[in-house]
Length: 572
Image (cartoon, rainbow, N blue to C red):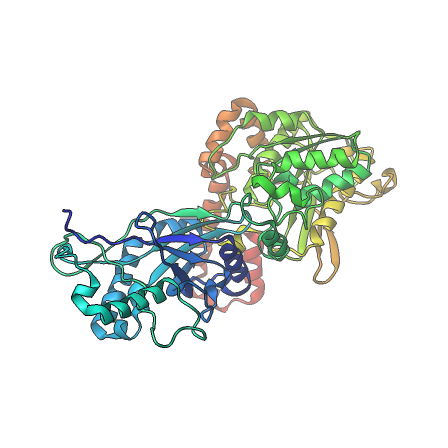
């Protein structure tokens, strides 16, 4: 075995500037494209057998014409994927086989003799979480494996084999390879030879084979990356990747600052995330220092910021994930305790399903709940209606209508489910105009202020007449929808739905009777909510009625006017 010829293995070395440039190109050029992108690495020679040669990557890897003094350029391909699941599930063995086939084809065609760098091609597979500046990557260096290992036949000096002149020329070529220069200053007499040819000793039977070890690596941790990179990139990331996460996000910061102005002195933040480098430019309670060291917990950092702004405020931060349908259940009891011990609940989370349990708990405990949600240039702010009769008895009599107002889920005919599975970058985040959150946050707090000044409180009707004169701050709308595209705003009213999955009497009763066993069943199987509330039966009845109408109508349905079609949709 001592006579086997051994080959040094390449080792990748990725500079932080490479990830910064990749993030920039992902947002500005690649977007959602997963097409291969040509890049270059730089091979540096090593003088020591114990140390492998390094293939280095920096921001210049995306510039084909870039040169490096003392290094050899190696061409390769970058495959940047949109989701972590796609990164993990991609068939890496098939990718290696394809790369190896390309190397072998270049050898057989003679292309490798004209351009020896084709013998050292590589592929880089990446996935980047641009909100946290965390990247996962996997390098593929295809290595040709001969049918049998190469053996060392003999070891002789160059002078004995090639003579003094031949040995001198070979030594000069080796020195030129060890210390290459850019083309404009390279010595014309001694062109540098090919940098390397990746071979693996061993026996695999007939023909040539390729090998690889699929071990993904990660990089881009904020605590070791130069701060200047993130100062430059984070503001550019805001409009494309970031939206509110939990109660201490963009909306949470806007709401809490307005609450302080109204004299609120007890505020609790609930958020499970950490401050990232894209947050401070949008979220007024955070600073750049909060992003360092991996990022401070958002809830605690927001509470600290409020105390710095107004030392008399009693602010608290809880690092807590909100249980939601379709997601693994975290700690449940703590959220119930928080809802029951507070007077007003603001639902400022970034997914629909994350608002379900707080909506139910607010109804069960008779608390006022306010929801605020954003689109690109649209917003909705609404107050949830009073709890069902089974919780706190009948509401006081109100002139102008006594129907119960709906909650955020009263317009749904399906149970909330996991809406974040395998989402690409644009689907993971709300791309919103920067001023929208400040408007929505202000409207949410002003809605609360008007409601608290109304003598009927949570039972205040949405109809402004005739109870408007009773309210110190005027009528209290149920739902506010606004659009920045036309700078318009409209107030709407929605009645409570008897089969709502969050605030209906049957759901609140089930929670009061079964407690967290009911919540766990609803989280693990969202269809359970549909069966419990009767939505499943409602859908079946609706489809059956359509089938009966189609059967009775026969061919006449094809000649009906648009009014009949509208009637059908109205019935649905």
